[in-house]
Length: 231
Image (cartoon, rainbow, N blue to C red; front, side, top):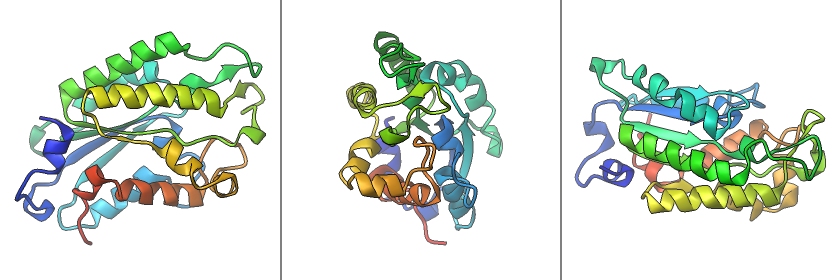
């Protein structure tokens, strides 16, 4: 069953369903780093769902610095430990990873943390593994503020590499009928001034305003809208 079939099943109201168990895997953007006020978009969504009649369960399994290979390594084991309600496995997986893979080490034209060919293999394996476990949706990466690079004085992120890596991920998701939310393009369309106002001083992570915007982008995305319920 595909994610769209799960989330858009006809004649099924979210209120009539049992609570869903949802896992969110990825890097620091899933973890919520950069938002000391609200804890990031996953934490805010978790709190909103917890206060609704349906009460979907959302597990934040984001790890700072994770690449696609790191998520691949831990995915199945952590997934199988997150189905506590009636001893069932989770119903849905949210993935968001890739920006750390694209970083260049030491200098702007240095070697990528994950070279492009290796990245294509890792993402393909990750998507296939994820789909074998449950329906999947993918939230794309946030564009960095290039003027603030290098991050931690050693990692160089840039839009050109980000675009290349996210375009492959988007294509790989489309081939597998996995819904993909293109945050990179969506935020760039809002302009450089808007982006700089929504990204931390480190140039990499959304700030509190950024995570609020990210939450709204995701909540207004059709695959997630089907899960929304009023408090």
